[in-house]
Image (cartoon, rainbow, N blue to C red; front, top):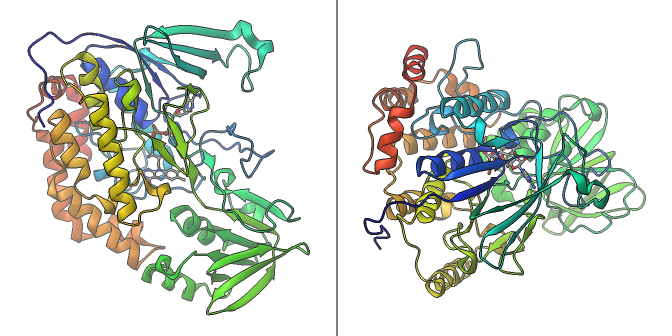
Length: 497
Ligand SMILES: Cc1cc2nc3c(=O)[nH]c(=O)nc-3n(C[C@H](O)[C@H](O)[C@H](O)COP(=O)(O)OP(=O)(O)OC[C@H]3O[C@@H](n4cnc5c(N)ncnc54)[C@H](O)[C@@H]3O)c2cc1C
């Protein structure tokens, strides 16, 4: 389907982007390139979103039961990028090592945050960003514009809809709203018998920062995703015992098996928590009908996050049901409110921020009138077909927005179809493939193994070339943007490679 429109001049819209993380910044840049008047409202004191590490936690509510949580970032102090920096940068602003900074191939969270700040500086985005500004409400007006109410947290900390602080509210009207508020903050908890009354300490990984508080404890880590494995391996260094609950044997990769064998003295695998007992024990189902239990001090739930948009009033047009945000045409536009409401950053397991750029460019071009969306009914049908296909494939609803392995070509097809975005270069896939294999085999050391590995040398060369040449694709706004990359940044990139 060719969605490009005729030759009418692009229209400039007044657009509010909510959130200044990777997705919001990608959106701000693409919207500006397309000639829109952009305001980014960001509740934190700086840009970066999740990557803006916050040593504070939701200590008063460590399970995050009272939504929304007060602390946005869920990153822990030791967190390093899970994918190599070479596959993580914006298309035309590679995430290059810089001297005097964390130049590792898998840098820590601080370096990613600095990179996002560099990106803001390079493209002059900060003048569009209003920091310390939390959006409390976004609702469509009868004229199909968007009324946005925000509060300046610098004026008075506002807890939800605290009516006493009304004088700090700002009400504005925009032609369109782009929601880019992320989805790694609001804890998602499993349903386990006894969770409400268990007398030990319980928390979600959202509130985990450092291992020290668990020194000498018996800790149960529930969930075997990246955070669960990272946290279990880290806590093991100080705790008396750690029990990692995998959910299924499929999660036990050769890499994890090696870690379990190496640290068998105090790191143990369990399959499932059966219940939390009144006497403080945690009972496990161990498979094959057998069970065991342990007297634990702490349970940490590394069980993922829920999509949550507490500020958004759509009268039911957009709902979140078991982590399905919908209906969203191509995970971006709710058919009945499109194009003035859109979401950037909803998909999971994608190349970020690259895919955010693609989504954002599409939104920008649709808003300017350069691209047309299908009719509302057609968009609805497409979403329903997508749901049916996922259901037929047995994909649980909570994975609706997980792209990755399920639809490996989705990102490329999307970019090509909707905004002439170049396909991901083969070397990026190769690079990712090699490190994923490394992670499967050597969980504890894969990042350092790949720091000096010859096996990705060729990919590195390709990356270097792409930094230097950054061959412009056919999309004209992209070509224009090449001129916007300051020459000194390109030379710094060359110098440091
Ligand atoms: C522990 C952990 C490890 C991760 N590791 C990786 C990794 O290795 N590689 C990777 O690619 N990704 C990783 N991620 C995912 C990471 O979240 C994404 O890379 C990226 O940060 C998502 O960007 P975003 O802009 O969509 O959301 P966020 O980064 O969450 O940004 C959203 C922004 O919206 C703001 N906001 C929210 N609500 C409001 C409001 N009401 N008003 C105003 N502002 C608001 C927030 O303050 C925030 O700044 C990890 C996430 C976590 C939690």
